[in-house]
Image 1 (tube, rainbow, N blue to C red):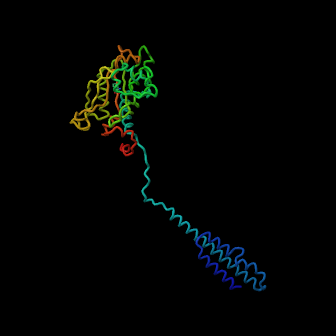
Image 2: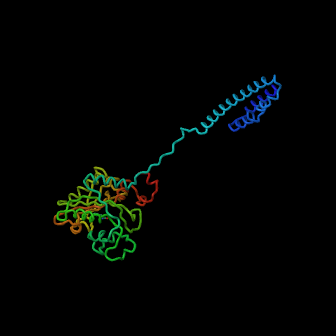
Image 3: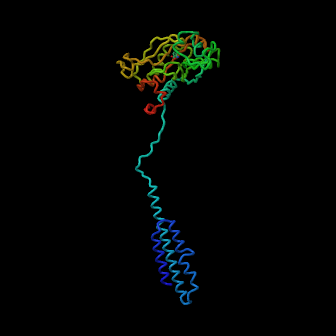
Length: 353
Ligand code: PHE
């Protein structure tokens, strides 16, 4: 019996050596220390032994049990350690790996230009006035002194709202310029005191639409920023001063400006403002087409009829107005050669700004 116990112990310990995971350990426990294990059978049969052998065998069996228990605990610890080491290895974070870049968006180049325009005119006391994009023919043309069938309308081929094109004198359309905002603003201001309307100084930014062939130079959808100042002693000198100062603040203090006579139905006199080409500094290059000047905006003194349409008595009030294209200005500032990039959603283009 004593030999038997010795064998049981050796066999169990040997088997334990081969245990490599917790599952196997559990199985080992069942077969070597469990109810029907050889060791437990020894305990069960103790009663069959001759009386004098019982205590000896009993003690030895207990010793074996204690040894197995100890070995089991030791193995448990070892397995646990190995497991921790393994999971540390598997889940190791390689802090030397390059991180994943965080992609952040940025402002569209036109938005940047628009914001600079707002800031500059804001500094000069102009307020932003928002006006609708769907207009009537009356606001987009008639109130601005375009008589029906005036040839100037040909310059601005118009998108009409579905079914409106041939609907009488006043069809709905997409505004072709921000100038109808002039009338809306004058109405709003003059209605506060029709007998003696307050002066106003606003810019009207927003989207305009023209039914044109899309090309490198023109899109069917584009921004404009309209400007309007109306008051009691506003002169062409104010117009020139304000717009030249604007050009200097946007393009740099050294930039020269010039005004060329032009024609718009809603201003009289009308002009086109050029700035000195900042790329060649007046020498003449491909961007300014050798002239040394870049056309930046249209402007003029508000036509008396337009003042009157807005509720301002042209005998007592004068004003100047201007309109510029932020996309065109952005193209000049960044030497962008094709206006179609602005709507192409090509990140390679957009991420440059
Ligand atoms: N509305 C004109 C255009 O679209 C620009 C302009 C605005 C000219 C105000 C003079 C005064 O071309």
